[in-house]
Length: 416
Ligand code: AMP
Ligand code: MG
Image (cartoon, rainbow, N blue to C red; front, top):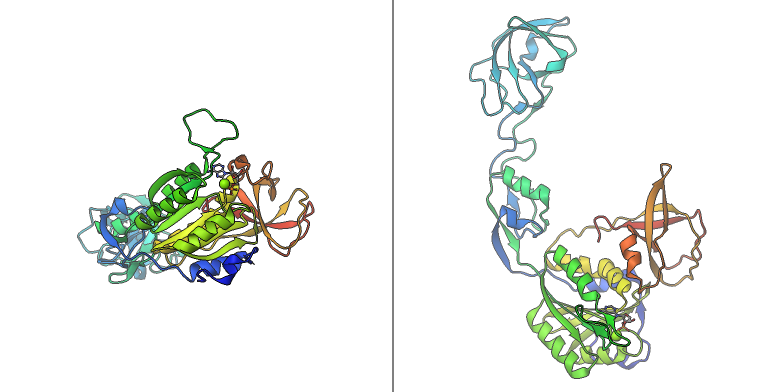
C-alpha cells in the first residue's frame, strides 16, 4: 500500500476498474482469528471456525423411504406374488422379528428395515386381504430404501469450516446430535456519517440540512450480516473532529465505514488525514454511482470510505464491502454474485468507460423475464433502491442500450 506517496499529492489519483478494486481489497484481507463455542441456535448467521465432523451416521440405520411392505426380493416372481404379512414396522417402533421366505412386514416411512427384508414395495402398488399382500411384478431389488450414512457418513466432514450457518446448517448440526459448535467471533464494525449538513432524526430540519439516512441504511446492512455494530453518529466536516473519530474507530473496531466527504472538494482533506493516520490503497473506482470510494487501513482497522449519496452507499456496500466483511468473518469460499441476462424494456444512454449499476425491476411478463428501470436513477434517490428488485449491470465497455437488448442483472434476493 502506498503511504504518503507522490501519488497522494497528485491532483487526480488514478481510478481503478471494479475488478482491480476488488482484487486490491481481497488480496489484503485475512479473517479474524478469535472464536467461541456457541449453542446450535446461536450459530445462526455465524461462521464455523472448525469442520463439523459427523459423530454418527445419518440416517443412523437403513430405513424405508415410503409407506409399503418390506419384502425379500428373492421371493418375488414374474407374476403377482402373494406374501404373508407377519407384522408392522413403525418409525421409532421397529419390527423385531425376522422376515422369512414368503413373508412381508407392513412398514411406515422412516421405520428401520426389518432383518431379512431388502426391498420396499410401495403401498399403492399392492392389494392386501386377510393377512396377505399381493405384489405385482416389475419391482427392483433394494428399491425405496434409505441406507445408513447415505446423508452423512460417520467420521466425514458434515460442514466445513468457513461455512456461514443458515437454517439448513442448524438442522444438519442437530441431526448429528451435536449441541454446540465453534464459530469465529463476530466482526466489530464502527461507522459514522460525515457532513455539516446532516441532521439526526427526531428534530426539525434547519435550512439546507438533510436527515442522515446513511447510518440507518448501514445499520440495516450490517445488522443482517451479524456484525457487532458501533454507531458513532454524525461527525462534522472538521479536521480535529474527524481525526478523533478515525482514531477512536480504529481502536475499537476491525472495520471502519464512513459515508460522505470523499467527493471533489472534500476528498483531498480526508485523504490527507487518512494518509497521515494510516494508508490509502485506492480512492476512486470506475463505477456509477459510487466513483469516490476509499479503501485503506488505519491502525489495525480496515477503512471503507463510502460516498455520501444514499444510493452510492448501497451500491458500493453491496459490490465491495459486504463480501469484504464476509471474508474478514472467515466465510470461505465467498459466495459468487450471480448475474444473468434478460431483455430490457427501455432505452438507456451510456458512454463506455465506467461500470454502471442501475436500479431495475425484473418481472415475468407473459412468461418472459423483462427488466425496467425502477424509477428515477439519481444517486440520491433512495426510493429507486426500495422499488427495485435487482441491479442492472452495464459493464465498462458497454455503450447505449436499446429497448429489446440483453442486459445483465444481479438479483437483490440473496444480495441485499
Ligand atoms: P458527500 O459525499 O459528502 O459530498 O455527499 C454527497 C451527497 O450525499 C450530498 O448531497 C450529501 O448531502 C448527501 N449525504 C451525505 N451524507 C449523507 C447521509 N449520511 N445521509 C443522507 N445524505 C447524505
Ligand atoms: Mg459531505
